[in-house]
Structure formats: structure tokens, C-alpha cells
Length: 208
Length: 104
Image 1 (cartoon, rainbow over the protein chains, first blue to last red):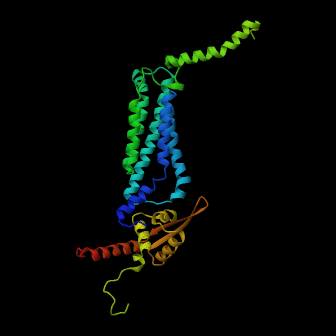
Image 2 (cartoon, rainbow over the protein chains, first blue to last red):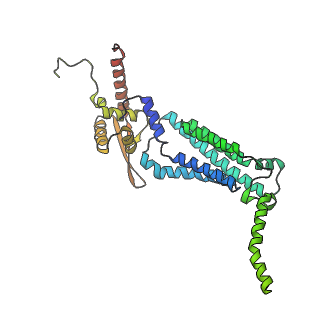
Image 3 (cartoon, chains in turn purple, blue):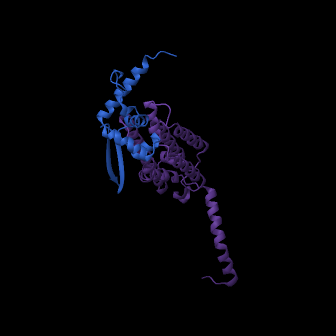
């Protein structure tokens, strides 16, 4: 039992306890991981898909696993409003994440205006800013300073990423937008897989 | 205590008990809370919490609502209006008691 009884501190402790289940840290950690992976495999849409998929599943996990373990506590009006705003931020992040994904999909489908191509070039930066911004707002709303720290770390990582001359559309990209190195690698792969068959044709004369 | 030695102020003993005071303080700052949350935050055991809540319920200070969520029993506890008033009165009383205390 705490030696100090101060109502404001009790309320703050109770509020913070509802966020101390580690789900935020797991979610944000996985976002860092997926973001790095998306850059590594040249498929930035992965991070957008992850953001869009993670937030609704987060809510579901919260209701099914976390709530029965930490307990349920409806707070009074100011905290209720903060929670409402938090839900709004998460919903907006999901919508924007989905929007970014659809935008990249649209870019990969056909001819697009030059401004859209410019946006495509900086899409990783946009996703990162959405993510960092959402974390900063969330951290402020729920008074969890570590979320702000995660947001700053995210922006630092994104700042490290340099946009390339061509849109990093990865697996969604049309062949003409793929980087030269990717095309070279794919050509080498095609040649190496066709080589044994060519050797067999030369040796046996069997063209089947 | 004899009748003549009785002080002219009366402390609400239901609220004054440390464990109940802690439970009421936790319930005062929220709308309601369930058993699990109260148990974890007050540091009381299940049985201890249950007995203190029964006393508070008998005094009309808390309301215990039992329901089923996904076929599992779920108990919510909330301070009643008289519970809030009793806690406020106790707070004022303690404050006035210690306010004019001379420095040691």
C-alpha cells in the first residue's frame, strides 16, 4: 500500500496503469521492425499495411486479453475526453495508412501526374511522418512520455532514409519503375534457371 | 469511551479504516472500477477487498454491480452519492484537523 495518499496521484497512477501492459511497446517495436524491413526489401507499402492492420487488431487484443487481466475502469470526464481523442487519432492514422497504401497502389497501376510521382518518391518519409506524428499526439493525449520518445526515434530513423530518384514501389511497381539493380538481379536469376535446360537441349537435341 | 469523554467531533469509522479509505480514494477519482483493478491498485487480497466492500455496501457508500461479459462473471464497484459525500466530509474533517496544527 502506498505511504502517500494524494487523490491526484492516485488518479494519475490508475490512468497510467491502464497503459502499462506492454502492448504499446510491442506494437511500436513491431512497427520499427516492419519499417526497417520495408526499406530493406524495397516494399514501403508493408509499413502502411502494418499500421492499418495493427490498430484494429490492437483494440481486439486489448478487449480479449488485456482487460480481463488488468481490470476495467471507466474514468471521469476529462480522461474520457482524452480517450475519445486517442481513438480519433488512431482511427485517423488507420485511414491515412490505408490511404498511403492505396496511393502507392494507384501509382503502380498506370501513368500518373508528376506531383504524384514526387509524392511517390517521398512516400517512406510520409509514412514515417504520419507514424511519428501519431505517436507524438498519442503520447501527449495519454501523458505517456515514452511514446514521444518512440516518435522521435522513428523520425530519426526516417531522417536517415534518403529518397531515391525513382519511386520505391517495390513489389507493386511496374517493370519500368524497378531499379536497375533489381532488374539485373532478376535477369541473372532467369538466366541461371534457364541454363540447365539449355545445356540439356544442346547435349540431347531434345527441344521438348 | 465514556459518554462524558466523547469528543464533540465524530470521525466516520467506516471511511477512517486505512484499507477502506484506500478503496474509497480509488473509487472517488473514477466513475467505477472492477474487482481486478481495485485489487491490483489497492494491494488488498480478494477476500480482504470483498469484506471491506461488503462493509462499505452495508453503509450505503458503494454499489456493487454484478454482470456477465462473454459468459464470465464481472463485478463493477462504484461510489454512491452518499459515499462521495461521506468521503468529502471525511476529507474536510481531516484537513481542518491538521490545518492549524503548530509546527513541531
